[in-house]
Length: 99
Image (cartoon, rainbow, N blue to C red; front, side, top):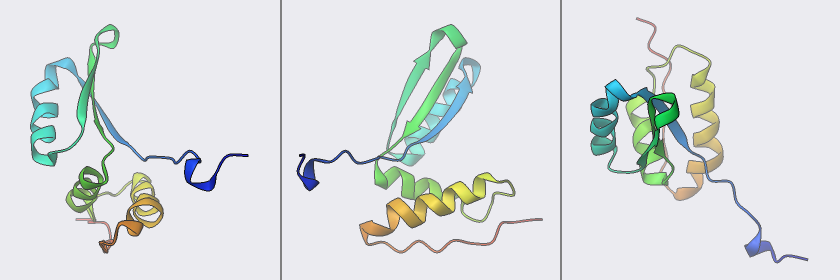
């Protein structure tokens, strides 16, 4: 029987797929977030910005907090509630901007 500290933990990720023509935008976001990496999918002519460290996820939540008007808003709320709340920093979720 595996020990409780050896059980597999789920690490949340935030991924955005860009066309290769928009690679500079992916690189700029990576620079702003200071966390994550870019994976290239040459067969699909795309690159994917992947952010998984908690530091980067918190920065994304702070940047998009209150700006989404789509069902994706709920994904962010569950991410904050389940994964990031345990790190000690309280993140206040804002009402979506409907203007």
